[in-house]
Image (cartoon, rainbow, N blue to C red; front, side, top):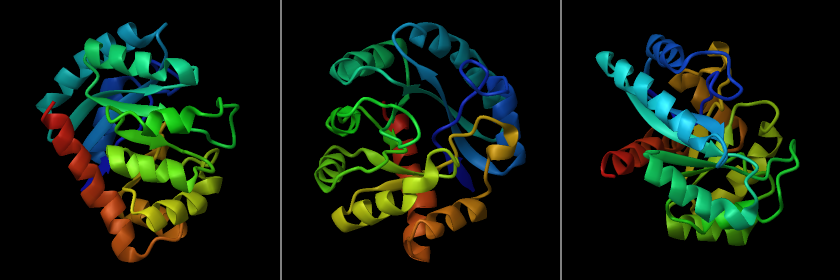
Length: 219
């Protein structure tokens, strides 16, 4: 069953209520979904508090809904501060908006993110370097293979670098709309399209996300 660790609701720039996105994920066959709306220090407390209420509601269904955030366009020098604050406010899972080639993300964001073991996923990391991938591996930060068209142009590069180093990868949708959610089979196709073997793709879609879920449960 599908696990997606990077999604958005109308609490940032998605179109659905958190509870509706959770329900859509149930219908799509997900076993777990993380709600990770874009935040900075300006919106973090409000988004976490509002998302938490729908995470509790969704416990009525056969799905694990994880309270997360995506730290977005935070100055690189302040990312660690934002991570600490997100944890203090109760974020179970932390995604950092990586250096995608489609947005003007501050250079150095990838390096700071992978250097902090409190980060779970570095989203759409663009032209991540071998050195950054090595640091990610050492700190248990997973690199994202994404199905979102604006960010997916460097999937092949990310897959190549991560495979060379042995850094864990996860396949996420960065969903903003219901139609963005993928089945497990569709996610495996995305991973294989990035250049992974069938076995590697299944690991990125099934095993690695489940490992992160277990880590989240232990917090």
